[in-house]
Image 1 (cartoon, rainbow, N blue to C red):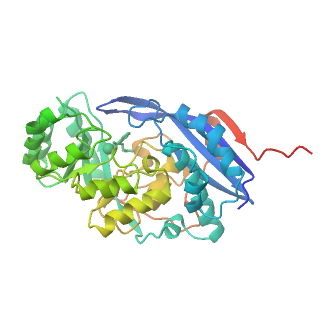
Image 2 (image 1 turned 180 degrees about the vertical axis):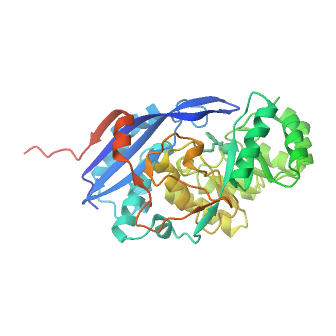
Length: 374
Ligand code: OSB
Ligand code: MG
């Protein structure tokens, strides 16, 4: 495919509710979108980097720089036939996986449109609907949290994930479990604990959770394997898994029994599929994580979640949990059974609302192939 232009945009989108994790509070998202124009078609990609380098080292600003100076020019200089060609196009650039995923995922969207099939089908998806869970941030009081859980369960969500940190853990779990003994429950520490907390973490076993997500360091496998030997509850790795080799190492070392796959964190659809395949071959269930995405990233997460190994409910939930107005049409809707139906129109399956995107845009830059000067 000839790439005619890449248009980068930064959008300011206030979250409906502040989202608090062990590393801080997010109130306003700075969403970076890439629109890739090719032969009359338009593919869209979203960068999942945060506003600050606290989940990963990348940020909206760092990704913008790398896209404008490095990845954008590399992509327009080539004629990628497939989304799967992008890792080779970008191979010179180290790291910056969220920036890379922004463009790679847009090329997959374009490819699906060119082939006239849904993105899910192009990826090899097998599901017509996907099971959904919610990730609930740290609240200022337990009663407030209980009210939110009650509402999410009434909406139909199949799994409740509680963000936790020292001081917001066992007391919270106790109250939640005594009120809802049977729900599918998990927690996510985003690396808030250390080895000295080992006995404390072992006490989480009392709450019969589906998993404990990323309790220790963001870049660790070994100490998670030491902890997993003492825990009955499966550990799920998020931050630690940056590619297929990491997944293999973590599985081999028994650092985890479940893997969270995030498109941005692993660098795009190609590597996400590779992580999924490695886990599936070894009997390790995976699920799709979320990064407070707008509709574009959400559409990609939905397509990814249709792969065979995504057997657990993901953090892929309705647009209305995050935004007063999402930038796609239709919005992402979740059924009363806690499922999202997979669209079967060509490409990502959700239209981008250009008028709204334009209104939310605070910066814009177009990358084209450099004109040859005679
Ligand atoms: O660790 O899964 C995480 C949000 C931002 C950064 C990291 C994480 C999260 C979430 C939110 O848990 C998931 C969502 O998009 O709802
Ligand atoms: Mg996580």
